[in-house]
Image (cartoon, rainbow, N blue to C red; front, side):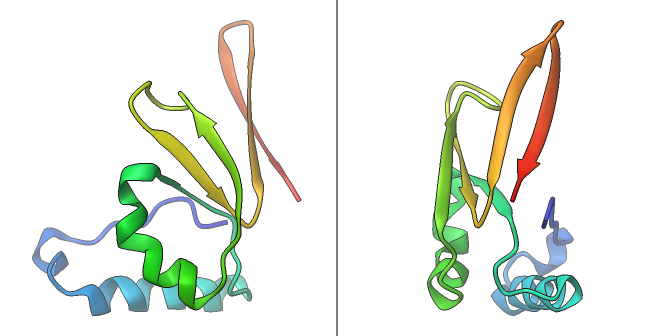
Length: 93
C-alpha cells in the first residue's frame, strides 16, 4: 500500500521526480498494482500512472475526509466504519 508521497517544494515542477518516486515505491513493494487512494481532485496528477499500469478503480468513498471530495481507491478496498466515535480503517484484499 502506498500511503502518502510528498515532494519537497523545489521539486514540484519536475514530474520526473514524482514518476521516479512512484516507480521506486512499486519496486520496493514488488508490484505495479499497489493499493492506493487519492482525492478525486488529484486524479489528473495520477492519471498517467493509472493508464500506464492499468490500475483498477475499485471503490469510491464519499465524505471520508471531508464533504467536498471523494476518495478514489485503486487496486484494493478501504472500508470506513465508526465505532464509539472512533474511525477504524480496514484494508481488504
